[in-house]
Length: 187
Picture (cartoon, helix red, strand yellow):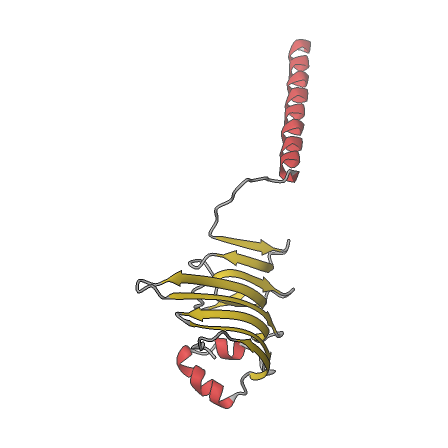
């Protein structure tokens, strides 16, 4: 009987020790940083501990729509880039870029950096556009309206034209253009 009791005590001590070793090892591994030479991804979401998205880096295929307070609205951008979000998980600006040489040999290229007004679209942007022989470089200051952009995004696309006719839209402030000799199709 004494021998069995001693054996159970040893078993209990060894089991407890094994559990402690496994638990401590798990927590130690969780604290280590991962290090990679190269990472191939389609999209990276940088999030706060509470899950609020703060930045998205994405390829063209996985680029998000408009995100307002964590809710995504369909908005086709057909681009790759980076979006920045405020403390509420609402898009606050971004950097997009792209370009290609078409089958006929014409080149199209663009780069766009923007800063958004609270609850609205871009207030300030720096942009480069090229399409064939036309190109444009601009710095634009916009005065966005004071109604929340969700008022338009929550409508069916078929109602956007009527909404725009009854609500003030962005007014263009100062613009600085630098144009080469070829005239830009966006100017």
